[in-house]
Length: 176
Figure 1 (cartoon, rainbow, N blue to C red):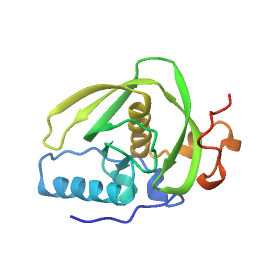
Figure 2 (cartoon, helix red, strand yellow):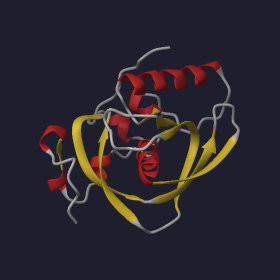
Figure 3 (tube, helix red, strand yellow):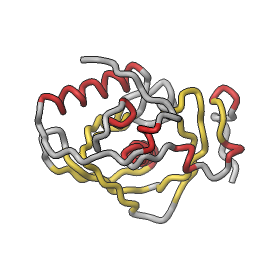
């Protein structure tokens, strides 16, 4: 369909809580999801939320076999998730490097739950429920944050671990 412009940090629309989808299976929703996948793939993203392209709806997508921006990451199943919820199933958190298409060129060390349960609806309105861990769980939590108006730099606890990707020791272990 179309590659859309991705909003960048500083645009106030990225800080708003997105609205719930009420009509499933519509042509408009299908076109939105297709555009989101086109946009994500064109930018080598791991996921994308509708607010990132200026659409204030609770729609997110994610998934890839291989990702150039995260070459060490295992595959994540391609998913459309509408009106989602995310729930931690453990208190254990892990800090890992994240980037964002709305914060281009930057990376930061972000704590995320290591195991989650998530659910919502597919494009037709069929309910879904899954469990995830590792990078898969990180991606889901990151994209869900966009629906709540939260960007990953707001979750960074140590700002010495935030900067331009070209300047950070991304291949080294994160220090506690």
